[in-house]
Amino acid sequence: MGKEKRALLVLRDGSIFPGKGFGAEATSVGELVFNTGFCGYQEALTDPSYAGQILTATYPLIGNYGVNGEDFESDKVQVSGFVVREICNKPSHMKSKETLDRFLERFDVPGIYDVDTRAIVRKIRNFGVMPACVSVYSGRQPDRNELLSKAMKLDYSKIDFVEMVTTKKRKEYWVDGNKEVVLIDCGVKTSIIRELLGRNISVVSIPAKTSAEEILSLEPDGILVSNGPGDPALLSYVAKTVRALMNKLPVFGICLGHQIIAHAVGGKTFKMKFGHRGGNHPVKDLESGRVYITSQNHGYAVDERSLPKEFIVTHKNWNDLTVEGMKHRELPVFSVQYHPEANPGPLDSTYLFDKFLESMK
Image (cartoon, rainbow, N blue to C red; front, side, top):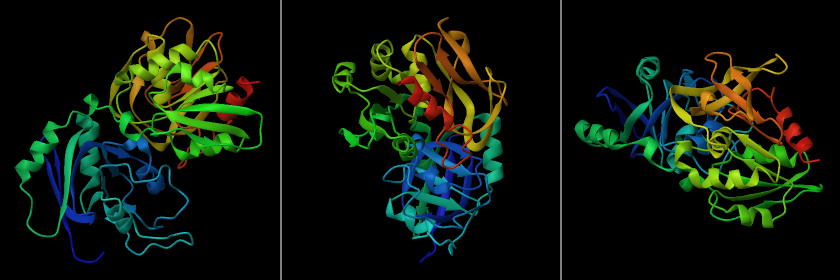
């Protein structure tokens, strides 16, 4: 890792965690969250849904299989910072191209290790996610009060992160098939696009602020509203678009897309205490009675009581009974809060992409 770097993690409540630094010598702020997965750190770090957040890994050893050229969910590291207990600097994997340290450094993202991640996670579970500041340095230690001030100034729920991560121009992915989907990119994971292409569905990915009229002019067979970061209540412009499309085309929402559909029909969302982030969340399909193990990454949830009567809840989280899926009683409109494409995580729910394809026939 070259010269030794030090690091500080300062939370809004005044807690200070000194540790060792990796990645970039930089200072950044973000909402401090945790993920319970024991693998898949490359996918998590590049997931646009983590934009504006400092990610803490609950699994104690991170970086042991390095970073490869295939498991990107976007074209860059999206997190503001990374917090781990122990980092492996000599990864072993046939596909490994670089160390985690070099990976974060290349994208100018600071990381801290040799800290008590259990204490950090317990604090988040007890008091909820909170703004924090992480600083990596090799010279003079930064002023702790200045880092605390930076953390206290962050109001995650007031920032439109979708505007930052959505594609800036239309992207087209064509395959041999007779179906075409317009994907409203709110911070889409590459794996979602792969799942569609694997079913011979062509994809046109568009900026989140594209109008319903422009989308309809593309004459798609269906609409997919993607995952993404931030508070769905800020995305009235996407909800307006989805509202105009629901009566005309099949619509499938994933994660943030699920929440946007709720807002489009007059529903509400609320911020969870510490969210669901990991690859082992049980979700019950209320129609079949089957329980699926799912991959999740969200800090907001749909308020079931706010949904109109034409929508029914189809899935619930079997840990806390929050809404994990819903559908319109008559129209081909449905959504799930979890990630059917997984990566990382179980593939129990990839059938939902087949269901989406079927809705377009």
